[in-house]
Image: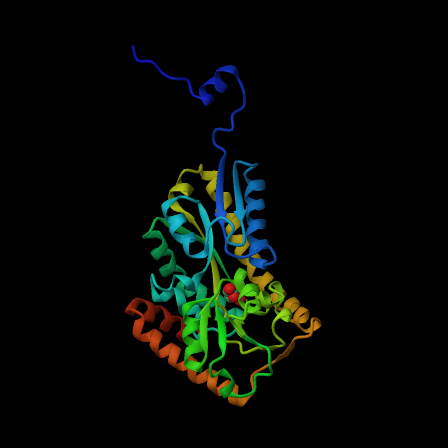
Length: 327
Ligand code: PCA
């Protein structure tokens, strides 16, 4: 005779207990620390999901690269080792040049343009994630990127040999074209990079300057408005498919709210962080003509080299976005 082994759910049903057999627990990893508005936002997202599903889906957020290193987050979500992750989108540029389109100069120089660029690139980015069994949930821009130095940046020559910390490959290229020596450094490693004398300067946002207490290492912030790069939050598709329909809906709804909230948090944090930098003694200014011209020349080169790397689809998406922007 065929024998059935009783599972906890069957036993619970037989004895009339309520079961939590459907409840799921996800692991989520982000490289950014708790001081980052992105991390506050994703933690709020996790809380919203737990609340909307009555605890049926709990997402445990591991911040600051504590569980999985930045470069391993996407492969881990792809394998399903963890269910969800957040990365700096442009670090995926080796997979496809479309991922670094938000770290190119002259493409999107304001929040409205950065959001329009996200909308324009979202279908192709979603498709690339889907091809690897993953689904993006939302993306949020950092404030625009500028240059931190321990001197007043007023001439092109000052870039010569300057050791500059950069968060991705494109920014490293940019530093090279300016005549500097770039090193890619994780946000969480910024204090060590400065205190051990590995870098003299860095390119990042007001937000990261503030959360990494830039005033301990540098004296000036040149608000160059280079570009507004994004973080992307994504999940393993199979993990999503295992959820019941109402839980899936709750995830998507909370994600939509996180996206909206996140873009506003970014604007607010830019203002608050600019003030914090100044209050802590950092001189904030915009580039003078000579520096602006040098940045423009390096940026033009960065852009034309991207065009050489990019395939037709990526270029068409960018062209469509620019046509719409310039209308
Ligand atoms: N902060 C992150 C990414 C861009 C930013 O503003 C960093 O510097 O690593």
